[in-house]
View 1 (cartoon, helix red, strand yellow):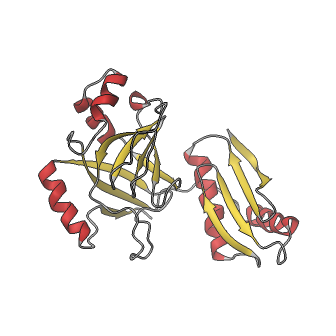
View 2 (cartoon, helix red, strand yellow):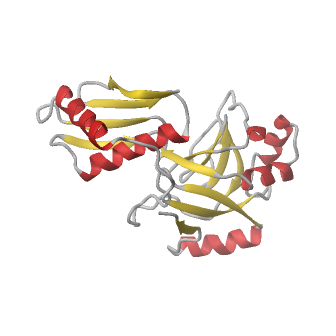
Amino acid sequence: MDYETPRFLDCGEAALSVEFGDSVDPAVNARVLALDERLRAAPPAGLRETTPTYRALFLRYEPLEISRAALIAAIEALIGTAGVEAAQPAARWTIPCCYDPEFAEDIGEAAALLGQTAHSIAQLHAGADYRAYMYGFAPGWCYLGGLPQALAIPRRVSPRGPTPPGATLIGGALSLIAARPMPTGWYVVGRTPERMFALDRTPPFLVAPGDAVRFEPIDAKTFLALDARACAGETVARQETLL
């Protein structure tokens, strides 16, 4: 559900969550990102950090510099004068992804659970249009909405072992790209040679929240060639500017 006016929830004594809805929805997320952009452009004194999520904007502030009431008033003024409306993606990324079992460790298991073949899972996953909603859980983990309903899969009861870097996963009604090895309850159905997160790159996050994403199937030989180029610092995903 999309809230007509945002809700303000305390997160301790020095943080606030500005909630625009209660679901993973492109319009809700676009309002989150629009407020984030305006606060970054003209931050009130005392605002230290903003972190967008699916449906809310997390704000960390210094209470000795700005009170909770003053911060909320500043946000309400921004929303009231400029509006916070859904926006179109600024960029579209085409990200190479290998769905061969060698690089898609769980695709056979996911296929059995979904009553499909590994080939059909690869086709469905690569044929969808995704929206980058947020980064979270671990550094550089990019969460994507737009997973086909046919690929919606319950998360594991117990986590699997650490994912490989670049693992492309599905879980629930979402997909994600993992940047660092971590245990997870999701299923690895592919792997990209692209580096989604790199501290020596400005900005370190390749895809911005709100961007559109598609996956381009590649074979194992192409993966290894692109991985070598990405390891040398080259961006192997393709970007198309939309705005």
